[in-house]
Amino acid sequence: LRAVSAAPGQRSVLAIGPDGGWVSFEAQLLESHGFRPFSLGPRILRVETAVPVLVGQVALLAEDTAARQGASRA
Image 1 (cartoon, rainbow, N blue to C red):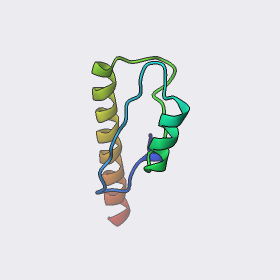
Image 2 (image 1 turned 135 degrees about the horizontal axis):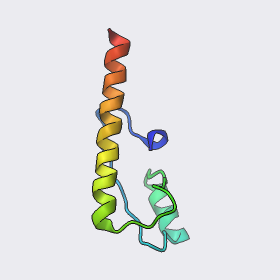
Image 3 (image 1 turned 60 degrees about the vertical axis):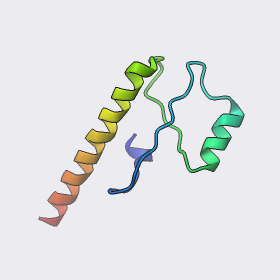
């Protein structure tokens, strides 16, 4: 997730794919609109699980990034 994170202060939009994965056309369309693919691993998660996991990961990454920037400014 760190490799595809946005710069601090920028919004993130997450697209959660179907359990069978994105078809080629969908993946290409998303990438043409600036989406960068990543995976949470080989397990298939229900959307009810995937959303809070992703939001938590994004929040943790944002906090970590802010802490690193604060430490580098000190």
